[in-house]
Image 1 (cartoon, rainbow, N blue to C red):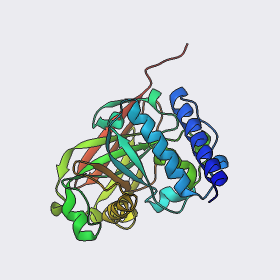
Image 2: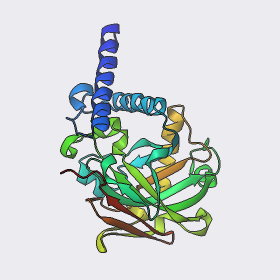
Image 3: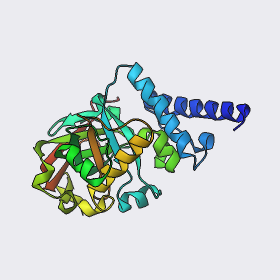
Length: 271
């Protein structure tokens, strides 16, 4: 790559980061960023994500883990992409089961149910045995994905740049060692205001949620940022995601991990 090409790519990355950052701060969705970084340059998209991560840290946020996205074939079809991705989890994104999540911090939220893994050790061996041994516990979780891009008109570079379309996440109250159950065998049902709206099993997450964690562990090592002890990893959707509306109660039952729930309410009311 020539110096001029490198400068142009750097400028495009910064412009995409500025667009997404402004959308998040002003809480107004923006146009896709593929027009700036291209529809297939995933490396550029992760460079945008990195710029935005640095900005969040500069503003006081703390990284608590990572999320794996686009692991469910159903979700891939919904979004129109064909590969997984990852994003960063920050401390201010975390809620506990039963909490009320303010809708003001979200633009176009959609909920999905999944397994969260909490790591007991660093993952320096991304093989099946190394990954399994590194897991301290598993917890039922809701991930509320969100997009700063208007009408969810996203391709792979748009969602990667936008921190893998991250919003907030909710963790259940029960932690279970992975030696006590097989993640591939879990069953999930998700409800919105008491109505069943989504379902699936561990097989719907890249064939096994542990496969998703192995993919992320390898990817993290490849980029020189291995998964660390204490990290929370959201392993990916177990079934289709559903829109979240003001006033909704979203609940998921993930057997044998138990229940996780949150209510979403708007506190800033217009005239």
